[in-house]
Length: 233
Ligand SMILES: [Zn+2]
Image 1 (spheres, rainbow, N blue to C red):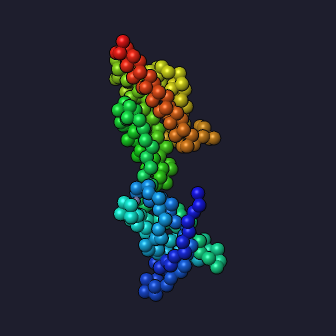
Image 2: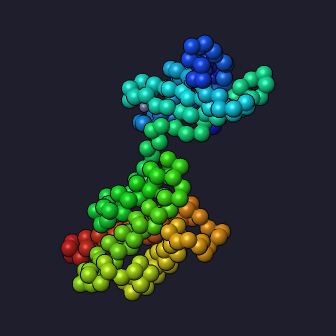
Image 3: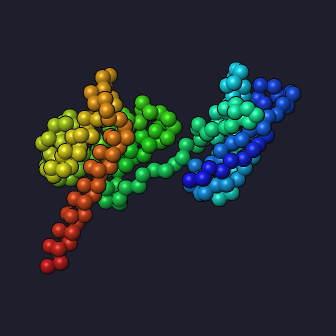
């Protein structure tokens, strides 16, 4: 991806009266975080703040004509004399690129989808210590709702069991069982004081949860196809 840059005038926030101005070269956002449309406009306004010598932050307001909404980008400024270069560090609002799940899965476990999307928002906002807890909670709803759909007679037990026991006793498909167990182990690392699996992180947890979802999706399709064949005979 080629990053577009723009040389802009930034107004000083330290001294409003003097209206002192510097020229900064900013990396422009490639997409609008609100609607996802491709973006190539210059910022509407740029301000900068000098915290101490050499430490500068710039704040740029952009306007997206596609969704007619403003968004905001925070830059860290590096003094690469004679130029000041701005590198984007945060965007407001955080990009809303939620993972989409199948209709069948959303019907099976609406709470999983809701909590997973909240965890994604937390991650996009940089709340890295919180998003792992969210993914772990989402996993619990995914596994338990799936287990209840296969064992409706044991609903109360499944709801009250710890996740690990629920996976061991009520998940029949071996691949889903293995993936859910691995996800649960990594998920527990996100909630406990001591991290047992040092070489794995939240991205691995998401990868395992997504693989669990893929297998559950294929089981749901299989059940549907099976019912379709039996009803069509
Ligand atoms: Zn937009």
